[in-house]
Structure formats: structure tokens, C-alpha cells
Figure (cartoon, rainbow, N blue to C red):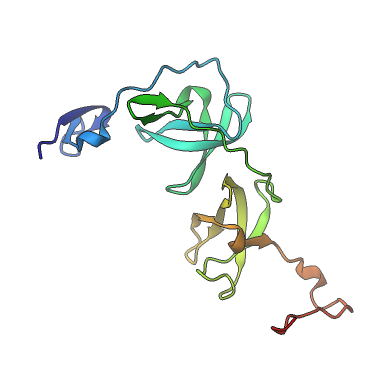
Length: 189
């Protein structure tokens, strides 16, 4: 199958950083330029946007905005970064030869605020494994939450967890001081 040769506007060749990158790509990866942006139109949560970062456009969701600063969350790789309005444009899907704006997904508010200390469990089955401290960064979808924790080598790691894998921090100051007996589930009703 013949693949068309494309020349990128903003990417340099790995072999020669002074040469614009060209590549053979699948024809299904080529689409027209999206409709023009209105830079005077502000974005608001949860608008779906394209953010220009590391020389390419990434699809994300506006999490917060203040003045000309927009916090945009990304699912892959999981992250939340800050952008100016000039680094954003509306996201459009190209379906059946037409540009279509995706519907806003009004998300139910989270019980956590960005910057809140939480506990997460990265086991596939949340029953097993220990929870460890993390910082809640924001909600990325109906049941997707971006958190950041410290790895064993003390580097910051950002991951997406679902609602089964995140919880509020347990207040350890009252640990062992309660006189109420906790009810436990023994497997029968």
C-alpha cells in the first residue's frame, strides 16, 4: 500500500535538527486543518481543547481557569499542565468528512479539591495491597482522577486512578483512641 509523504510544520528531523521532519504516514492519519479559533472566546471547565505542548497538539480537558491561565488535564500520558489561552484551541473531531465539536461532559463535582492529600491503591483489585499517600490533582472523566505520589526513588509520579482506588486520608491522630467498636463485615447478612 502506498503511503503519502507528509512534511510537518513544527517538528525537526532526528538526523538533522535544522531540517523539517518528513514521514510516510497512513492516509487515515491525514485530515484537513480544523476550523479557525476565536482567541477572544475563553474556555471553561470541562471544555475539550487542544493544547500546544512540545511542538504538537494534545487533546485535554480544561480543569480550572483563572485570568489567562488554564489548567488542562490529559489522560495519556496522565498529567495536568498550565497553559495560556494563546496555547489552546477548541478540539474538533473529524467524522465523515465534517468537523464536529465534541459535547461537553458535565462532570459531577469531586469530593476532593486539587492539592488535597488522599490515599491511593494501585492494585488491580483494590481489596488487596496497601494504600499510600498522594496528592489529588483533578478529575479527568466520569470516574478518572489524576493523582501524584512519590516513588521509591523520591521522584514525582502522576497516574490516573478510578473511584475504587482513591480515598480520603485517614486521620491517624485518632487512631486507637476511639472507644466505639467498629462494625466489621463477616460475610453474612
